[in-house]
Amino acid sequence: MAPHPSTLLEPHTPPAVTTEPHVIVRGEGLTVWDREGRSYLDATSGMLCTNLGYSQPRLVRAAARQMAELPFFASFAHRTSDVALALADDLARLAPLPMGRTFFANSGAEANDSAFKLAWYYHQCLGRHDRFKILSQERGYHGTTVAAGSATGLDFIHRGFGLPLPSYIQVPCPDPHSALRQGLTEDDFVDRLVDHLERLIAAEGPDTIAAFIAEPILGAGGVIIPPSTYYPRVQEVLARHDILFILDEVVTGFGRTGAMFATTEFDLSPDLITVAKGLSSAYAPISAVLVGRRIMNTIADGSRAIGAFGHGFTYSGHPVAAAVAREALAIVVEEDIPGHVRETAPALMKALADAFHGKDFVRDVRGHGFLAAVTFLTGSGGRQEGEWGSQVMAKAVARGLLVRAVGDTIIVAPPLISTAEQIETMVALLENAYRSALAETDSAR
Ligand code: PMP
Image (cartoon, rainbow, N blue to C red):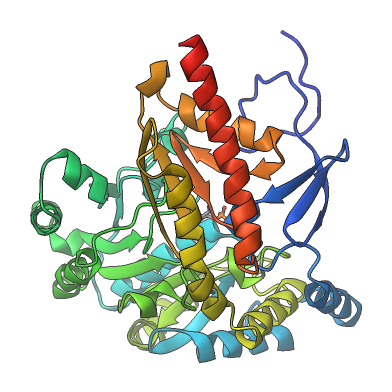
């Protein structure tokens, strides 16, 4: 077997790969450059996270200042740093739920693991000793740690690891497209999903279920926008059984949907909210669980019997990450990033619709805020499943545009500072990539 060309074990990459990785060396605004000097417009905001673009000078200065002042101090055993406290205060002011307190971690997956533990701990505090099951959705994405990976509803995250763990149960994906496929109205589709949830809870026993986790819009699963009545009805079922509702706003938080939080926009009442990515615009690894007041009060009271909350990380509330996050939040508020997204999103949707709606081999175009997607008809044009996605993505990269393919879906999620003109340029490059793939279909297939 040919040797691997580097010493890096690359995430989400086949270990047997023998080609050189694509190496990025610099970023500025919406553009990154590779080692060969080629430039790329980044239409995926890194991994849906560099919301404020690359080389934002205020974020760079905030990191440098904090590095010089206090590069590290742990939040541990009732000692913490001023900047971790201040960031928790900032989040308490912005939070879209009646706030208790904020718990810090370093990644989306760690935040979700922490939310599960908070849910378990909450039920323990109430003497409910059998509440450990976690419900989530097929095609939901919550990270790849053992727990968050178990809640993630994507086969490629489970394969080879014996996941999901037995106490993680997935419910059907609220994808409006599957309603269409089954010939159901949206209302009938939601009825079925809610009925499935009710029956699942009855069969498992409500006293065995701790929490339900979901994204407001399923991002990495392929930009799936659930029908508007779905979450309000799910919430009502969960509340009846005191199954905690964890809303994963790791992608949607801090402006991507055109609101500071999707929670407010969709009028949801989660018990716990997880955030990451846009919290620091990805300039430093930091994530958080926003713990609602009701949950926090129960935990604070009930913990007297259990003892300390035995959970946390060396880098929980890391001062440099916290300082960067404080500055990122200040920019999001001062520049009204959610307002800019709300105003500019129609230009993104129009450009995508003009380029793709009703075109050959295109299933549909959809989006909300700066989170959009084009899905090609799987198996069409003589292609295997996933081939449309990988081909259009490769051709986009060759044209200087970074997009992400999930199966036959291309995700378009520009940095939140993008102007309408910049977005139109991104979509024009994507359309050009699609037309090139189309030309190969006509000539070669
Ligand atoms: N939740 C959602 C909705 C995500 O999209 C992601 C990452 N794509 C995660 C959680 C996990 O975040 P991380 O990769 O930082 O663990």
